[in-house]
Image (cartoon, rainbow, N blue to C red):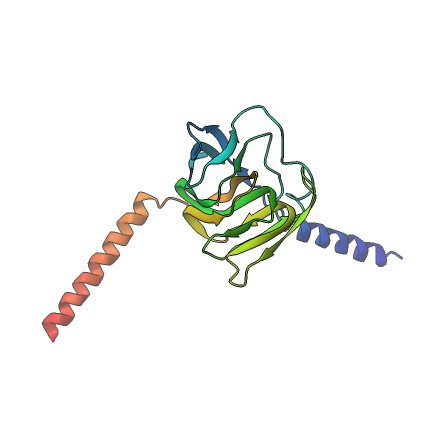
Length: 222
């Protein structure tokens, strides 16, 4: 009995650590302004860094909520994957007319996430590999996203609520979507790419200089 207790405790600690390792705290965008039916702007905070976020579309959106309003980010659809925290409060961009959406960041971000609300029967393509991080019950019910054969987009069956992840580093994201009454989204990131220190640039210049010198020596020797 005395030996079984430490073994059981050790297994419990290992399981807890493994579960915690997959919980990713996401910084979600605070949308602050929208002056027309095709664009909006906001920002997100990663530690002490603030990243400006811009959204533009070729098709008009239904509405953008930048302050108090209905919180459509309810249900377990946003946190039953690797994401630790659902989008906060009521900030949302509700797309309507299909077309191309472009999201830009003021600096390179790592592993951006797209939260989805009510993507009913929508066909979506990002043009780059994506991962379906989570889906499930949400404000408008439930649905299932299915990846396309290339793994760059999905088709929504039912009222899809969930999170899409784009692995890698990005300065901007673009995706196409089809028309619907409205389907909402917001964007978050897991982190931002570190900016090289001045010393790093200096070392890079020295390295390039040495490579150039070596190339000249080889040419002279030939």
